Length: 227
Image (cartoon, rainbow, N blue to C red; front, side, top):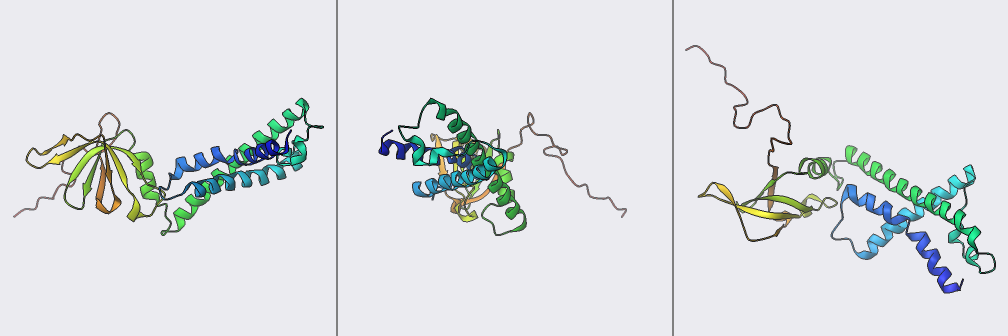
C-alpha cells in the first residue's frame, strides 16, 4: 500500500472510533454552539485516544488482537493481505467499544461533579427539565419584556452557562391579552436569546401526565374558625 494512502488509513482508523463516542456524549449534554470545528475534532480525538489506550491494555490482558492498524508497518505491501483483515476488524471494534466506554465514564463523571458542585455548567435541574419534562409537550416561554409565547422546543443550549441558554421555539404562538389566548404567528421557528427568557413552563397534557392535583382546583383549604 502506498505510504500516503497508508498514512491516511491510519489517521482514519485512529480517529473514527471517537465519533460514536462523541455523539453519545452530545446526546446527554447537547452541543455548545460556541465550539469550533477544531474543538469538536479535539473532542473526537480525545475519546478515540482514550479508547485506544483502554483497548490496548485490555487486549494485552485477555489476548485480543492488538490495534495494529495504527502501526505503519501493518500496511506494508509485502505483509498485508486478506488474513490481516479479521484481526484489524476485531481490534477496531474493540477500540470503538472502548471509546464509547470512555464517553460513558465521562458522562457519569460529569454527572457526579454536577451533583456535588453547584457551580458546574451542567445544572441537574435544567438538564432534567429539558431532556425529560418538555418531551412531547407544548411549552410556554415568558420573556423579560412581558411577552409570552407557546410552542415546542426545537433546540435548547444545555452545555452552556445559565446566561447563555438560548432557545429555538418551533411553531410559535403569541399570547394576545385581549383574546386571553395564544395566537399562532406566521413564523416557523423563533429564536429566543437567553437574556430575554424569564421562565419556561411545560403545558399539562392529560393524555400523558399523571398528577395528584386537578387543574383549577384549590390546593390548600383554609380552616374555618367559629366567630
